Image (cartoon, rainbow, N blue to C red; front, side):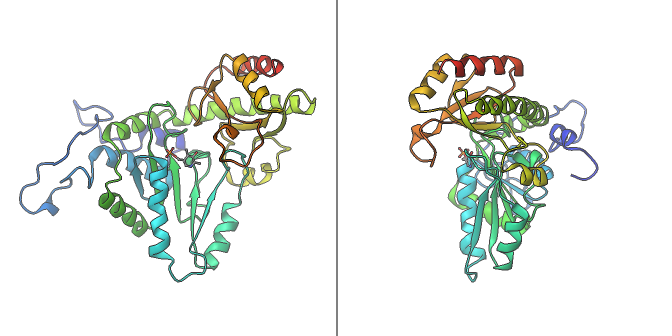
Length: 334
Ligand SMILES: *Cc1c(COP(=O)(O)O)cnc(C)c1O
């Protein structure tokens, strides 16, 4: 990130030099085989499962944000499974092979001390992987905090338009990135060029989107916390940006801003249903980080250890006063 601020990088990262008559961001390259006569090592691109110029452009943009080489995957889960192979290859001798953490956690928004955990893990010979999806590299830089690998679901805030799935892994060690690349090629766990191009296009607005979402989320979290204090319909409002939140001191230490996601609890599933029925601006949907405000009652999936009325709210780009008014009337309705 030398020389330029993040706001500049997201707009310019990965773009080709300004050649007369060419677009700023070249369109997606759709190719299975590429022309590759003679010695195949003489062609930068030979076959679509190995590499693609549209991936290359987005991966190089991501690398400049993450501070390490990046490998793109067709989803966050694919990036996660790619990293799991490093456990077997790299840390076979260590008693603990890999420490995997997420911060802030989805959906409860607890914050882990990445630098401290990395130091402990490294002392025991373990690799450290951080799932940085809720923060993105703009708000938190796991590699510079000591993580070996950082994984992100680009499906969420990175792309932010609720129109694609994608993921990436960034590694501090170029050898690790190469292992992930090889795994991707062997298994054919490859992203589509159209998705990679849409992601690169969306990256240009990541900084303005996220900064606005963080500002609005702070205002909304404060409103909800004040409501919870009055005992008005909700309790346990969690947002790392709230000064009273148990995650706040650590979040201040390792994050530049506190993200778009807030959680809170309403009394039960029926109250949550009344909340969603009454809201006009909160889409009831899974996922988070996008430009449309959305929320869901997490217990409806059955997987998370949360109460029946636990709601994860993702703050979008709508006017914050409209959002507060809508949330207020929807919470009054429960
Ligand atoms: C969504 C998500 C994933 C999975 O990403 P997909 O793109 O849906 O495969 C992984 N980790 C976190 C924290 C997520 O929110």
